[in-house]
Image (cartoon, rainbow, N blue to C red):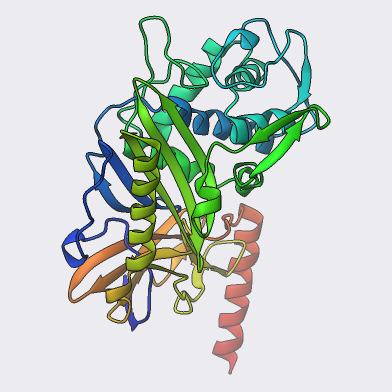
Length: 381
């Protein structure tokens, strides 16, 4: 393995060293988490305590809908039918009638803006056949994302009969970050006021921070008496995208104050940066259909680092001098380590940008013959 060392302004820490940061002020909520949208944890407070998320549950419903869109299983013009069960939800809703049809576009708008419980269940039934089957998908997806404190019981966050959805601030942050990988959702969560049903039914966003916080883009508020006031708030400034999760705040004003404090803390203390990968030169490949493979950084386009450490960063690239085919696209080739003051603050896998097939027997024979011919020419000289 060869090691290339270079000094650079690099933004990136997967786990922030909190001791190097100013203290976060006291919060009203029982639990909170601040994450960069790329999944980096920046601050947590009782982040693994299991609590009820109320309608913040709908971020998972929206995530599964966006993933279905990406897979081509539905389009925004797909008609969604309200079943009698979906129309019986109560709580915040748009008063779907049994048999009424709206496009997925309008359903998503009603869920993201108006927190419509009936629309959330209607979308769940369309995507999975039944809400129960959809809930299985919700819980499976949560486990895939590394959520360890989450059990969904429905698609909208309402209490069930003798049951309740439980999750944690950390888990909601992870789900929120995954949802932000689908920027189309911000076209819904960022709406302040709109209508559905051809302008006949008005929607006003339940997330009032859209008007009070600079750079806010979403995502979802929640409240039921048992859960208190909850929010997953996303915001972006100067290329830095953050997610602040607040759970079980006593009042709506406390929820806003906590989310504001978390986001302010993030924007004041962290910065985003795209690490330069100029030192990642192509690596020679033997016995392959291509002579080289290009190494690239895996994961986010940018990383997040404390502003106070931005000028004292060193990067080290550990990569092999040569590779032997076959090589798969995305195959791990090595890693980039970022350090400050001798302390490792980030490790990023380096992967193959494209695959390289191994030479087949005919190609190997041709290569062998060419090699012999080349040696004969050299001997004659």
